[in-house]
Image 1: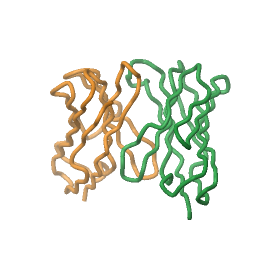
Image 2: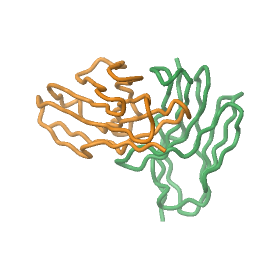
Image 3: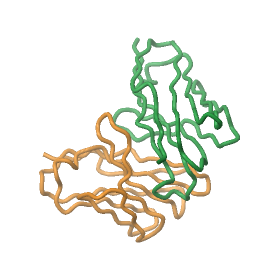
Length: 115
Length: 112
């Protein structure tokens, strides 16, 4: 069964500090991995997308890494800001054309940035 | 890029009343469309997906139904709402050409 597990479940850090969120997956076949940011009461917004051959991708202060051998990904946030407070969701695609088994969602990490 | 519209943004309905949530997509043709429900503190649960007009697949048995009357329109319905239908409903669209999924702003449904 395809699964995506994220850790930690929640995280509180001070403004300006860095943090790293983890995503482990058991999805096969693997097509790509995405990180989304979801503000409370809003829809998720894509941060990064990585395919099998990519192991790092940056989007501003967000840097995602992918190790396809160990099936692990991380999202590193640098110099955190209050606006980074949100849930971060890891989504892995099996590339089956978007059908029922196409996307597997993690439950997300709830990040709180304190001033 | 794609834009996904959902309405209403929030909805409070009594138990037993009908439901209709609408989702429309701009910026792509023939997208795969999805309805998700997200309970508080939980991950996204896939309810329905559609690969084309009139083609609906249901992922979980439930009180809800979905329809796709047009290529870029996806509707989530219920004849009689239950308390357990409360949640945050998200519409998603997958641009198959780029294999990128986008989400709408969501609808917060409270059934009283």
